[in-house]
Amino acid sequence: MPAQPHHAAPSSKLWLDLALVVFLIGFDVIVRLVPHTPGVWPFAASALFAGRMLRLPALSIIVPVVAVLLSDLMLPGDDWKITLAICLAVTLPAFLGMASRRWRGAIPVIVAMLASSLVFFAVTNFAVWAFGTMYPHTGAGLIACYIAGLPFLDKTVLGDLFWCAVLFGGAFALNRAMLSRPAQAH
Image (cartoon, rainbow, N blue to C red; front, side, top):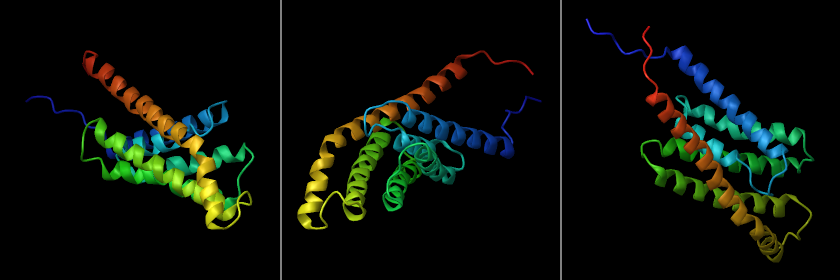
């Protein structure tokens, strides 16, 4: 009788998912705490990656929220309403990752990441205007807030695409390396 393929037990799949969640959260927190270009965080890319890769994709929502909250504990924080807006905005890539799982290749990842970057810009700048004290709560104040955020938009978009390339490219390279290893007999 031919040997049956070895499939991981459901509990080991859960452990692999949990390990990836912990890794991504730790990665996000470390990258945010070390010196970096303003606005270039891996939160959105990690959420998108988790949404596409986790066997239990609902866990992907945890990744960016916990990473933001943990790193905020070690940094001077924003108003809680602005932090809430940030947390909500960085969950979008997780949902887009789940929704785009059926499509293979780089195009769905790039489209989802670009959409996430633009929504993040819109939501977080609106929150800074609505809940902060830097801009008057007028139409002109909102426009001024978005204009002041424009120098960060390109960094956010390019940073999100860079971190997507790191995560998805790293997973691809790791997968290829594991597939090219000779099988070990049991």
